[in-house]
Amino acid sequence: MTVTHRKYVGVRYHCDACRKDVSDIGRITCAECDDFDLCVECFAAGVEVATHKNDHAYRVMDTLTFPVFDENWGAEEEILMMEGLEKYGMGNWADVADHVGTKTMADVEEHYYSVFVNSPQWPLPDLTRTFSPPSTPRRRQAPIPPPTPVPENKKAKPLTSQPCNHEIAGFMPGRGEFEAENTTEPDEICVKELTFEETDTPEETAFKLAIMDIYNAKLDRKYERKKLILDRNLQEHKKMLAQERKKTKEERELYNQMKVFGRMQTAQDFMDLMEGLQIEAMLKEKIERLQEYRRNGVRTFHEAQDYEKERAKRYNITRPTPPALPPPPPIAQFIPRYPRAVPVAATAVPATTDGAPASSSRSLSYGATPNVDRPVGRRPAQPIDLSTAEGLHLLSDREQELCSTLRILPKSYLNIKDTLLGEYVSTGHLGRRRARDLVRIDVNKTSLIFNFFVEMGWIKSASSRKRKRERGGEEAEGRAAGRPPPAASASASVPPPCADRMDVDDGPSIVAT
Image 1 (cartoon, rainbow, N blue to C red):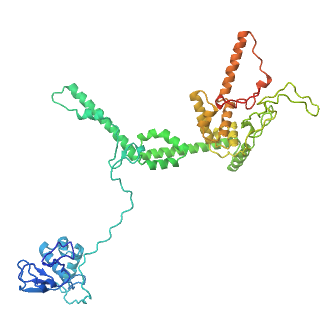
Image 2 (cartoon, rainbow, N blue to C red):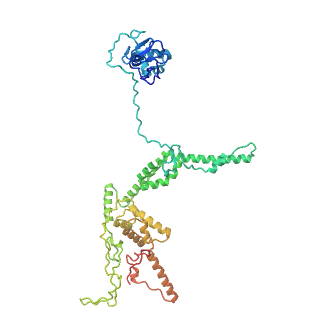
Image 3 (cartoon, one colour):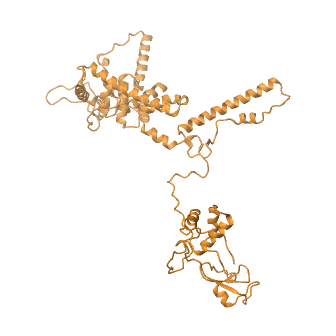
Protein backbone atom coordinates (compact mmCIF):
# COMPACT_ATOMS: atom_id res chain seq x y z
CA MET A 1 0.00 0.00 0.00
CA THR A 2 1.23 3.48 -0.84
CA VAL A 3 -0.05 6.39 1.26
CA THR A 4 0.77 9.88 0.03
CA HIS A 5 0.81 13.09 2.05
CA ARG A 6 -2.57 13.74 3.55
CA LYS A 7 -2.75 17.33 2.35
CA TYR A 8 -3.20 16.04 -1.20
CA VAL A 9 -6.67 14.69 -0.61
CA GLY A 10 -8.15 12.00 -2.88
CA VAL A 11 -4.89 10.18 -3.73
CA ARG A 12 -4.23 7.90 -0.80
CA TYR A 13 -4.39 4.24 -1.89
CA HIS A 14 -2.81 2.95 -5.10
CA CYS A 15 -2.52 -0.43 -6.67
CA ASP A 16 1.05 -1.66 -6.09
CA ALA A 17 1.03 -3.35 -9.51
CA CYS A 18 -0.49 -0.81 -11.95
CA ARG A 19 -0.37 2.31 -9.73
CA LYS A 20 -4.11 2.87 -10.17
CA ASP A 21 -5.92 5.05 -7.64
CA VAL A 22 -8.16 2.77 -5.55
CA SER A 23 -9.02 5.23 -2.78
CA ASP A 24 -12.75 5.39 -3.62
CA ILE A 25 -13.35 1.87 -4.97
CA GLY A 26 -13.00 -1.63 -3.59
CA ARG A 27 -9.50 -3.04 -3.31
CA ILE A 28 -7.79 -6.29 -2.32
CA THR A 29 -5.35 -6.23 0.59
CA CYS A 30 -2.81 -9.02 1.06
CA ALA A 31 -3.03 -10.58 4.51
CA GLU A 32 0.55 -11.87 4.43
CA CYS A 33 2.39 -8.86 2.86
CA ASP A 34 2.67 -5.57 4.66
CA ASP A 35 0.88 -2.60 3.06
CA PHE A 36 0.17 -4.33 -0.22
CA ASP A 37 -2.98 -3.42 -2.19
CA LEU A 38 -4.23 -4.56 -5.58
CA CYS A 39 -7.04 -3.38 -7.76
CA VAL A 40 -9.73 -5.89 -8.75
CA GLU A 41 -8.36 -6.23 -12.28
CA CYS A 42 -4.79 -7.03 -11.19
CA PHE A 43 -6.07 -9.46 -8.51
CA ALA A 44 -8.22 -11.27 -11.08
CA ALA A 45 -5.21 -11.53 -13.44
CA GLY A 46 -3.08 -13.10 -10.66
CA VAL A 47 -0.38 -10.47 -10.78
CA GLU A 48 2.69 -11.20 -8.65
CA VAL A 49 4.87 -8.29 -7.58
CA ALA A 50 8.09 -8.63 -5.59
CA THR A 51 7.49 -11.05 -2.73
CA HIS A 52 3.72 -11.16 -3.23
CA LYS A 53 2.33 -14.39 -4.64
CA ASN A 54 -1.10 -14.95 -6.06
CA ASP A 55 -1.81 -17.74 -3.58
CA HIS A 56 -1.44 -15.48 -0.51
CA ALA A 57 -4.38 -14.95 1.77
CA TYR A 58 -6.23 -11.70 1.11
CA ARG A 59 -8.96 -9.43 2.42
CA VAL A 60 -11.58 -7.51 0.44
CA MET A 61 -11.56 -3.87 1.57
CA ASP A 62 -14.63 -1.81 0.81
CA THR A 63 -14.71 2.00 0.76
CA LEU A 64 -15.45 3.41 4.20
CA THR A 65 -17.30 6.49 2.97
CA PHE A 66 -20.57 5.77 4.78
CA PRO A 67 -21.37 7.96 7.82
CA VAL A 68 -21.20 6.54 11.36
CA PHE A 69 -21.79 9.35 13.86
CA ASP A 70 -22.25 12.36 11.57
CA GLU A 71 -23.65 12.66 8.08
CA ASN A 72 -20.67 14.79 6.97
CA TRP A 73 -18.07 12.43 8.41
CA GLY A 74 -17.27 9.09 6.83
CA ALA A 75 -16.11 6.00 8.72
CA GLU A 76 -12.60 6.30 7.37
CA GLU A 77 -12.39 9.91 8.53
CA GLU A 78 -13.50 8.81 11.98
CA ILE A 79 -10.70 6.23 12.07
CA LEU A 80 -8.14 8.78 10.88
CA MET A 81 -9.25 11.21 13.59
CA MET A 82 -8.75 8.57 16.26
CA GLU A 83 -5.32 7.77 14.87
CA GLY A 84 -4.42 11.44 14.91
CA LEU A 85 -5.56 11.90 18.50
CA GLU A 86 -3.59 8.85 19.55
CA LYS A 87 -0.51 10.05 17.69
CA TYR A 88 -0.51 13.81 18.42
CA GLY A 89 -2.50 14.00 21.63
CA MET A 90 -5.64 15.80 22.71
CA GLY A 91 -5.90 19.48 21.89
CA ASN A 92 -3.41 19.39 19.03
CA TRP A 93 -6.21 19.93 16.53
CA ALA A 94 -4.04 21.37 13.78
CA ASP A 95 -1.92 18.22 13.47
CA VAL A 96 -4.97 16.00 13.79
CA ALA A 97 -6.67 17.90 10.97
CA ASP A 98 -3.55 17.43 8.81
CA HIS A 99 -3.66 13.72 9.54
CA VAL A 100 -7.32 13.46 8.52
CA GLY A 101 -6.60 15.52 5.43
CA THR A 102 -10.21 16.41 4.56
CA LYS A 103 -11.25 18.54 7.53
CA THR A 104 -10.09 21.77 9.03
CA MET A 105 -8.90 22.29 12.59
CA ALA A 106 -12.25 23.84 13.62
CA ASP A 107 -14.20 20.96 12.03
CA VAL A 108 -12.19 18.32 13.91
CA GLU A 109 -12.55 20.07 17.28
CA GLU A 110 -16.28 20.66 16.85
CA HIS A 111 -16.91 17.08 15.71
CA TYR A 112 -15.00 15.59 18.64
CA TYR A 113 -16.83 17.65 21.27
CA SER A 114 -20.27 17.19 19.71
CA VAL A 115 -19.97 13.41 19.19
CA PHE A 116 -17.81 12.19 22.04
CA VAL A 117 -17.94 14.80 24.85
CA ASN A 118 -21.50 16.16 24.57
CA SER A 119 -23.04 12.77 23.74
CA PRO A 120 -26.24 11.83 25.65
CA GLN A 121 -24.64 8.38 26.22
CA TRP A 122 -21.33 9.74 27.48
CA PRO A 123 -18.63 8.40 27.60
CA LEU A 124 -19.86 6.50 24.52
CA PRO A 125 -21.05 8.20 21.34
CA ASP A 126 -24.66 8.05 20.23
CA LEU A 127 -25.01 4.75 18.32
CA THR A 128 -28.76 5.00 17.73
CA ARG A 129 -28.57 7.38 14.82
CA THR A 130 -29.35 5.99 11.38
CA PHE A 131 -28.47 7.39 7.96
CA SER A 132 -29.96 6.69 4.56
CA PRO A 133 -27.48 5.08 2.18
CA PRO A 134 -26.23 7.48 -0.56
CA SER A 135 -27.27 6.78 -4.12
CA THR A 136 -23.71 7.22 -5.36
CA PRO A 137 -20.45 6.79 -3.53
CA ARG A 138 -19.43 10.00 -1.76
CA ARG A 139 -15.97 10.93 -2.91
CA ARG A 140 -13.56 12.41 -0.45
CA GLN A 141 -13.48 16.13 -0.93
CA ALA A 142 -11.31 18.73 0.64
CA PRO A 143 -13.08 21.61 2.35
CA ILE A 144 -13.60 24.53 0.03
CA PRO A 145 -11.65 27.49 1.36
CA PRO A 146 -13.39 30.85 1.53
CA PRO A 147 -12.90 33.07 -1.53
CA THR A 148 -9.82 35.22 -1.42
CA PRO A 149 -10.79 38.89 -1.13
CA VAL A 150 -9.93 40.81 -4.26
CA PRO A 151 -7.63 43.71 -3.43
CA GLU A 152 -8.56 47.18 -4.55
CA ASN A 153 -7.25 48.33 -7.87
CA LYS A 154 -4.09 50.14 -6.98
CA LYS A 155 -1.43 51.37 -9.30
CA ALA A 156 1.26 48.79 -9.48
CA LYS A 157 4.63 49.99 -8.35
CA PRO A 158 7.31 49.98 -10.99
CA LEU A 159 9.50 46.91 -10.95
CA THR A 160 12.62 49.02 -11.13
CA SER A 161 13.21 52.02 -8.93
CA GLN A 162 13.97 54.68 -11.46
CA PRO A 163 12.89 58.28 -12.05
CA CYS A 164 9.34 58.55 -13.39
CA ASN A 165 9.77 62.08 -14.73
CA HIS A 166 12.72 64.26 -15.61
CA GLU A 167 11.15 67.33 -14.01
CA ILE A 168 11.34 65.88 -10.48
CA ALA A 169 15.14 65.91 -10.39
CA GLY A 170 15.52 62.15 -10.79
CA PHE A 171 13.54 61.01 -7.73
CA MET A 172 13.37 57.22 -7.36
CA PRO A 173 10.27 56.31 -5.28
CA GLY A 174 11.29 52.72 -4.62
CA ARG A 175 14.52 53.77 -2.92
CA GLY A 176 13.27 57.11 -1.61
CA GLU A 177 16.38 58.79 -3.02
CA PHE A 178 17.40 60.95 -5.94
CA GLU A 179 19.34 59.73 -8.91
CA ALA A 180 21.88 62.52 -8.43
CA GLU A 181 22.27 63.36 -4.76
CA ASN A 182 23.23 66.85 -3.71
CA THR A 183 26.62 65.76 -2.47
CA THR A 184 29.94 65.94 -4.21
CA GLU A 185 32.13 62.91 -4.66
CA PRO A 186 35.30 64.59 -3.29
CA ASP A 187 33.57 65.10 0.06
CA GLU A 188 32.72 61.41 0.32
CA ILE A 189 36.23 60.44 -0.70
CA CYS A 190 37.75 62.69 1.96
CA VAL A 191 35.57 61.21 4.68
CA LYS A 192 36.04 57.66 3.43
CA GLU A 193 39.82 57.93 3.57
CA LEU A 194 39.83 59.77 6.89
CA THR A 195 41.39 57.75 9.73
CA PHE A 196 42.27 58.60 13.30
CA GLU A 197 45.65 57.35 14.43
CA GLU A 198 47.19 57.25 17.86
CA THR A 199 50.17 59.20 16.55
CA ASP A 200 48.02 62.15 15.42
CA THR A 201 48.85 65.49 16.95
CA PRO A 202 46.05 67.55 18.58
CA GLU A 203 46.03 69.85 15.53
CA GLU A 204 45.55 66.91 13.15
CA THR A 205 42.78 65.48 15.32
CA ALA A 206 40.99 68.83 15.44
CA PHE A 207 41.35 69.17 11.66
CA LYS A 208 39.83 65.73 11.05
CA LEU A 209 36.97 66.46 13.46
CA ALA A 210 36.26 69.70 11.60
CA ILE A 211 36.05 67.75 8.33
CA MET A 212 33.61 65.33 9.95
CA ASP A 213 31.48 68.21 11.24
CA ILE A 214 31.33 69.78 7.76
CA TYR A 215 30.34 66.47 6.19
CA ASN A 216 27.66 65.86 8.84
CA ALA A 217 26.27 69.35 8.26
CA LYS A 218 25.97 68.59 4.55
CA LEU A 219 24.17 65.34 5.33
CA ASP A 220 21.75 67.23 7.60
CA ARG A 221 20.97 69.73 4.86
CA LYS A 222 20.48 66.89 2.40
CA TYR A 223 18.06 65.21 4.80
CA GLU A 224 16.12 68.45 5.33
CA ARG A 225 15.74 69.00 1.59
CA LYS A 226 14.55 65.46 1.04
CA LYS A 227 12.14 65.72 3.96
CA LEU A 228 10.75 68.97 2.59
CA ILE A 229 10.06 67.35 -0.79
CA LEU A 230 8.44 64.24 0.65
CA ASP A 231 6.31 66.08 3.23
CA ARG A 232 4.80 68.32 0.56
CA ASN A 233 4.53 65.58 -2.10
CA LEU A 234 6.60 67.62 -4.52
CA GLN A 235 7.78 64.42 -6.20
CA GLU A 236 4.26 63.87 -7.59
CA HIS A 237 4.82 66.02 -10.65
CA LYS A 238 1.49 65.49 -12.40
CA LYS A 239 -0.50 66.19 -9.26
CA MET A 240 1.42 69.39 -8.64
CA LEU A 241 0.81 70.53 -12.22
CA ALA A 242 -2.92 69.87 -11.86
CA GLN A 243 -3.05 71.96 -8.68
CA GLU A 244 -1.04 74.72 -10.36
CA ARG A 245 -3.51 74.94 -13.26
CA LYS A 246 -6.43 75.43 -10.87
CA LYS A 247 -4.86 78.55 -9.36
CA THR A 248 -5.45 82.00 -10.73
CA LYS A 249 -2.62 84.23 -11.89
CA GLU A 250 -2.72 86.24 -8.64
CA GLU A 251 -2.60 83.06 -6.55
CA ARG A 252 0.40 81.76 -8.51
CA GLU A 253 2.26 85.04 -8.11
CA LEU A 254 1.55 85.07 -4.37
CA TYR A 255 2.68 81.45 -4.05
CA ASN A 256 5.93 82.14 -5.90
CA GLN A 257 6.62 85.06 -3.59
CA MET A 258 5.92 83.18 -0.37
CA LYS A 259 7.25 79.70 -1.14
CA VAL A 260 10.69 80.65 0.16
CA PHE A 261 9.18 80.64 3.66
CA GLY A 262 7.91 77.08 3.24
CA ARG A 263 11.19 75.65 4.53
CA MET A 264 10.64 77.35 7.87
CA GLN A 265 7.15 75.92 8.38
CA THR A 266 5.37 72.63 8.24
CA ALA A 267 3.24 71.78 5.24
CA GLN A 268 -0.02 72.50 7.10
CA ASP A 269 1.25 75.80 8.50
CA PHE A 270 2.33 76.93 5.04
CA MET A 271 -1.09 76.04 3.59
CA ASP A 272 -2.78 78.01 6.38
CA LEU A 273 -0.52 80.98 5.68
CA MET A 274 -1.30 80.96 1.95
CA GLU A 275 -5.03 80.67 2.64
CA GLY A 276 -4.86 83.61 5.02
CA LEU A 277 -2.95 85.75 2.53
CA GLN A 278 -5.47 84.98 -0.20
CA ILE A 279 -8.33 85.96 2.10
CA GLU A 280 -6.46 89.16 2.98
CA ALA A 281 -6.01 90.07 -0.70
CA MET A 282 -9.69 89.42 -1.37
CA LEU A 283 -10.71 91.64 1.57
CA LYS A 284 -8.37 94.42 0.44
CA GLU A 285 -9.90 94.38 -3.02
CA LYS A 286 -13.38 94.52 -1.53
CA ILE A 287 -12.38 97.41 0.76
CA GLU A 288 -10.95 99.36 -2.18
CA ARG A 289 -14.19 98.88 -4.09
CA LEU A 290 -16.25 100.08 -1.12
CA GLN A 291 -13.98 103.09 -0.67
CA GLU A 292 -14.52 103.95 -4.32
CA TYR A 293 -18.27 103.81 -3.72
CA ARG A 294 -17.92 106.09 -0.70
CA ARG A 295 -15.85 108.63 -2.63
CA ASN A 296 -18.56 108.76 -5.28
CA GLY A 297 -21.34 109.23 -2.73
CA VAL A 298 -22.66 105.66 -2.83
CA ARG A 299 -24.07 104.52 0.53
CA THR A 300 -26.20 101.41 -0.12
CA PHE A 301 -25.75 98.26 -2.16
CA HIS A 302 -28.69 99.26 -4.34
CA GLU A 303 -26.94 102.51 -5.18
CA ALA A 304 -23.76 100.51 -5.83
CA GLN A 305 -25.56 98.43 -8.45
CA ASP A 306 -26.85 101.60 -10.14
CA TYR A 307 -23.35 103.07 -9.98
CA GLU A 308 -21.83 100.04 -11.73
CA LYS A 309 -24.47 100.20 -14.46
CA GLU A 310 -23.86 103.90 -15.05
CA ARG A 311 -20.11 103.43 -15.10
CA ALA A 312 -20.47 100.67 -17.69
CA LYS A 313 -22.57 102.99 -19.83
CA ARG A 314 -20.03 105.78 -19.42
CA TYR A 315 -17.15 103.59 -20.61
CA ASN A 316 -19.17 102.29 -23.56
CA ILE A 317 -19.85 105.81 -24.90
CA THR A 318 -17.01 107.08 -27.07
CA ARG A 319 -15.53 110.24 -25.64
CA PRO A 320 -15.49 113.29 -27.98
CA THR A 321 -12.19 114.51 -29.37
CA PRO A 322 -10.82 118.02 -28.68
CA PRO A 323 -12.46 120.78 -30.83
CA ALA A 324 -9.13 121.76 -32.38
CA LEU A 325 -9.12 118.59 -34.52
CA PRO A 326 -11.97 117.19 -36.57
CA PRO A 327 -13.76 114.42 -34.66
CA PRO A 328 -12.73 111.08 -36.21
CA PRO A 329 -14.78 107.88 -36.04
CA PRO A 330 -14.38 105.83 -32.84
CA ILE A 331 -11.70 103.60 -34.34
CA ALA A 332 -10.31 105.93 -37.00
CA GLN A 333 -7.79 107.48 -34.60
CA PHE A 334 -6.09 104.10 -34.24
CA ILE A 335 -6.27 102.95 -37.89
CA PRO A 336 -3.24 103.96 -40.02
CA ARG A 337 -3.98 106.08 -43.06
CA TYR A 338 -1.92 105.51 -46.20
CA PRO A 339 -1.73 107.86 -49.24
CA ARG A 340 -3.62 106.91 -52.36
CA ALA A 341 -1.49 106.22 -55.41
CA VAL A 342 -1.85 108.68 -58.33
CA PRO A 343 -0.32 108.08 -61.81
CA VAL A 344 2.93 109.88 -62.48
CA ALA A 345 1.70 111.16 -65.85
CA ALA A 346 -0.88 113.40 -64.19
CA THR A 347 1.44 116.37 -63.84
CA ALA A 348 -1.19 119.09 -64.15
CA VAL A 349 -4.86 119.55 -63.40
CA PRO A 350 -7.06 121.51 -65.84
CA ALA A 351 -9.54 124.12 -64.74
CA THR A 352 -12.89 122.92 -63.51
CA THR A 353 -15.94 123.16 -65.72
CA ASP A 354 -17.73 125.56 -63.42
CA GLY A 355 -15.16 128.29 -63.98
CA ALA A 356 -13.20 127.82 -60.81
CA PRO A 357 -9.49 128.27 -61.58
CA ALA A 358 -7.35 125.28 -61.07
CA SER A 359 -4.05 125.44 -59.28
CA SER A 360 -1.60 125.42 -62.18
CA SER A 361 1.37 125.45 -59.83
CA ARG A 362 0.30 122.22 -58.18
CA SER A 363 1.68 119.14 -59.81
CA LEU A 364 0.77 115.66 -58.69
CA SER A 365 3.26 112.87 -58.77
CA TYR A 366 3.12 109.23 -57.73
CA GLY A 367 2.15 109.05 -54.10
CA ALA A 368 0.42 112.40 -53.68
CA THR A 369 -1.81 112.58 -50.65
CA PRO A 370 -5.50 113.16 -51.45
CA ASN A 371 -7.60 115.75 -49.73
CA VAL A 372 -9.82 113.26 -47.90
CA ASP A 373 -8.37 110.40 -45.89
CA ARG A 374 -10.34 107.20 -45.88
CA PRO A 375 -9.63 104.37 -43.44
CA VAL A 376 -8.17 101.30 -45.02
CA GLY A 377 -9.55 97.85 -44.19
CA ARG A 378 -12.90 96.35 -43.42
CA ARG A 379 -15.52 97.93 -41.21
CA PRO A 380 -14.33 97.91 -37.58
CA ALA A 381 -16.13 95.84 -34.98
CA GLN A 382 -18.17 97.42 -32.21
CA PRO A 383 -16.38 98.14 -28.90
CA ILE A 384 -16.97 95.73 -26.05
CA ASP A 385 -18.07 96.42 -22.50
CA LEU A 386 -15.12 96.07 -20.11
CA SER A 387 -16.79 97.45 -16.98
CA THR A 388 -16.67 94.06 -15.25
CA ALA A 389 -13.36 92.90 -16.72
CA GLU A 390 -10.62 91.95 -14.29
CA GLY A 391 -7.76 94.44 -14.01
CA LEU A 392 -9.67 97.36 -15.58
CA HIS A 393 -8.75 99.65 -12.67
CA LEU A 394 -5.06 99.31 -13.59
CA LEU A 395 -5.54 101.13 -16.91
CA SER A 396 -5.87 104.81 -17.67
CA ASP A 397 -8.87 106.23 -19.47
CA ARG A 398 -7.08 106.24 -22.82
CA GLU A 399 -5.93 102.65 -22.34
CA GLN A 400 -9.43 101.54 -21.35
CA GLU A 401 -10.82 103.18 -24.50
CA LEU A 402 -8.15 101.48 -26.61
CA CYS A 403 -8.88 98.04 -25.12
CA SER A 404 -12.61 98.51 -25.63
CA THR A 405 -12.11 99.59 -29.24
CA LEU A 406 -9.69 96.78 -30.09
CA ARG A 407 -11.73 94.22 -28.11
CA ILE A 408 -8.77 93.22 -25.90
CA LEU A 409 -9.11 92.27 -22.25
CA PRO A 410 -7.16 94.39 -19.74
CA LYS A 411 -5.00 91.47 -18.60
CA SER A 412 -3.98 90.66 -22.15
CA TYR A 413 -3.22 94.32 -22.81
CA LEU A 414 -1.04 94.53 -19.70
CA ASN A 415 0.94 91.49 -20.84
CA ILE A 416 1.46 93.06 -24.28
CA LYS A 417 2.49 96.33 -22.66
CA ASP A 418 5.01 94.64 -20.38
CA THR A 419 6.49 92.73 -23.31
CA LEU A 420 6.90 95.70 -25.64
CA LEU A 421 8.10 98.19 -23.03
CA GLY A 422 10.46 95.61 -21.53
CA GLU A 423 11.99 95.01 -24.97
CA TYR A 424 12.30 98.76 -25.54
CA VAL A 425 13.99 99.34 -22.18
CA SER A 426 16.40 96.43 -22.59
CA THR A 427 17.47 97.20 -26.18
CA GLY A 428 16.91 100.96 -26.36
CA HIS A 429 14.90 100.76 -29.59
CA LEU A 430 11.83 98.96 -30.87
CA GLY A 431 10.46 98.75 -34.38
CA ARG A 432 7.07 97.75 -35.65
CA ARG A 433 8.36 94.51 -37.16
CA ARG A 434 9.99 93.51 -33.89
CA ALA A 435 6.75 94.32 -32.04
CA ARG A 436 4.84 91.99 -34.36
CA ASP A 437 7.34 89.22 -33.69
CA LEU A 438 7.02 89.65 -29.92
CA VAL A 439 3.20 89.86 -29.80
CA ARG A 440 1.50 87.01 -31.61
CA ILE A 441 -1.90 88.59 -32.25
CA ASP A 442 -3.55 90.31 -35.21
CA VAL A 443 -0.92 92.47 -36.92
CA ASN A 444 -3.42 95.33 -37.27
CA LYS A 445 -4.04 95.36 -33.53
CA THR A 446 -0.30 95.21 -32.88
CA SER A 447 0.23 98.22 -35.15
CA LEU A 448 -2.51 100.18 -33.40
CA ILE A 449 -1.05 99.41 -29.98
CA PHE A 450 2.42 100.35 -31.19
CA ASN A 451 1.11 103.66 -32.56
CA PHE A 452 -0.63 104.32 -29.29
CA PHE A 453 2.60 103.79 -27.34
CA VAL A 454 4.41 106.18 -29.73
CA GLU A 455 1.66 108.75 -29.31
CA MET A 456 1.85 108.49 -25.52
CA GLY A 457 5.62 108.99 -25.68
CA TRP A 458 6.49 105.63 -24.14
CA ILE A 459 8.34 104.51 -27.29
CA LYS A 460 10.40 106.59 -29.69
CA SER A 461 9.95 105.22 -33.19
CA ALA A 462 12.79 104.98 -35.67
CA SER A 463 11.25 107.63 -37.93
CA SER A 464 10.98 110.18 -35.10
CA ARG A 465 14.59 109.54 -34.11
CA LYS A 466 15.64 109.98 -37.74
CA ARG A 467 13.76 113.28 -38.05
CA LYS A 468 15.31 114.48 -34.81
CA ARG A 469 18.80 113.67 -36.08
CA GLU A 470 18.10 115.45 -39.42
CA ARG A 471 16.69 118.50 -37.67
CA GLY A 472 19.70 118.61 -35.39
CA GLY A 473 22.03 118.40 -38.42
CA GLU A 474 20.23 121.25 -40.21
CA GLU A 475 20.46 123.45 -37.15
CA ALA A 476 24.18 122.70 -36.83
CA GLU A 477 24.75 123.62 -40.52
CA GLY A 478 22.76 126.85 -40.07
CA ARG A 479 24.77 127.86 -37.07
CA ALA A 480 27.97 127.18 -39.00
CA ALA A 481 26.74 129.39 -41.92
CA GLY A 482 25.46 132.13 -39.62
CA ARG A 483 21.75 131.59 -40.52
CA PRO A 484 19.08 131.91 -37.86
CA PRO A 485 17.16 128.72 -37.00
CA PRO A 486 13.98 128.30 -39.02
CA ALA A 487 10.77 129.27 -37.27
CA ALA A 488 8.32 126.51 -36.55
CA SER A 489 5.35 126.66 -38.87
CA ALA A 490 1.79 126.47 -37.75
CA SER A 491 1.35 123.14 -39.42
CA ALA A 492 4.41 121.75 -37.64
CA SER A 493 3.01 122.66 -34.23
CA VAL A 494 0.23 120.14 -34.64
CA PRO A 495 1.59 116.90 -36.07
CA PRO A 496 -0.77 114.79 -38.09
CA PRO A 497 -2.37 111.86 -36.28
CA CYS A 498 -0.30 109.32 -38.14
CA ALA A 499 2.88 111.25 -38.87
CA ASP A 500 5.17 108.49 -37.66
CA ARG A 501 3.21 105.42 -38.60
CA MET A 502 5.96 103.98 -40.75
CA ASP A 503 9.27 102.79 -39.31
CA VAL A 504 12.56 102.33 -41.04
CA ASP A 505 12.45 98.60 -40.55
CA ASP A 506 9.08 98.32 -42.32
CA GLY A 507 10.61 98.84 -45.74
CA PRO A 508 10.45 101.85 -48.08
CA SER A 509 7.75 104.36 -47.20
CA ILE A 510 5.47 106.15 -49.67
CA VAL A 511 5.50 109.89 -49.05
CA ALA A 512 4.24 112.91 -50.96
CA THR A 513 6.81 114.84 -53.02
